[in-house]
Image (tube, rainbow, N blue to C red; front, side, top):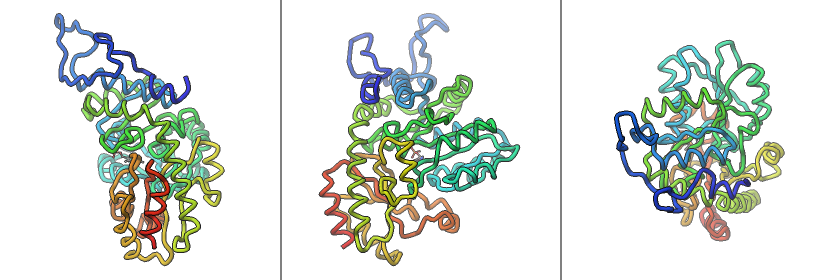
Length: 379
Ligand SMILES: *Cc1c(COP(=O)(O)O)cnc(C)c1O
């Protein structure tokens, strides 16, 4: 099955009792048993819920993986993966990470004795140099947030395989429509489903997709034992959102390309970070490992004036100023004070994240309205 067909059909059957074509919202906490221990495969809704099961199977199909496991948020999924490790285990992560991922690593799991190293993994040679006998896992995002750097998944996977390490890819920015890390050699894919998969800014959820049976069983155990499960209504909303993922992503990519090209020629803009631009250092790699360049981009203004960046963000009429991304509506964010505020300023600047950087999640509105909005806001 091709992607668009899988988005609409994979893992989804008409409801066996009524024939309802849409998966029902099984809003229940428990299931009646015929006799103690004799049931239909469902005992308690933290452990299993039919709406969730359908979504998990659909997500697995979209990432070309065997197992899908959903959590109450993207960070709930990250939490489950980090719980696979023990004190003293070392994780190497890219230094251009979602702020919340950095925070759970450093502020939560480091306190429990896990060790973290943050390295620029857009150069795979840096990984080889960072690996020690304690290293167990490598964690990357690509394209990265908010600088849209590209990390070569296949090159990193070749190194992790050689050293027997797990490779996790946060595929939130690309979505499974544009990139499938498992096909490129990754072991585990993690998503903030909140973003493109849900697609309508109405749900918070996370997911993991992987092939390994044993690790999948441990992650499902953690899902049940620790309890960060999504509710059935949210699973329904995401199933509904996914049915148009391919169409939405096509328009996100088209609009973002046009917005990036517009910004690039603007006299007040100093730098545009978008993998679809030929000037982007990851452009060739993006063409190889992605099927489109996505809907996310960042830019800075000449002079790096903070009041000027703030004035632009306050002047938008179509773009809304808010955290998050991947919804049908266009959003703008100020990473330094919003999504990445949990990373110390010194650490941010070391990684090239300026306080004047503006990040856009380009929505699927009419692109001429988006460009006009940028025109009037930047001036
Ligand atoms: C939003 C986000 C997360 C965290 O997901 P939540 O659903 O907000 O918990 C992780 N990674 C990336 C790249 C994100 O954008």
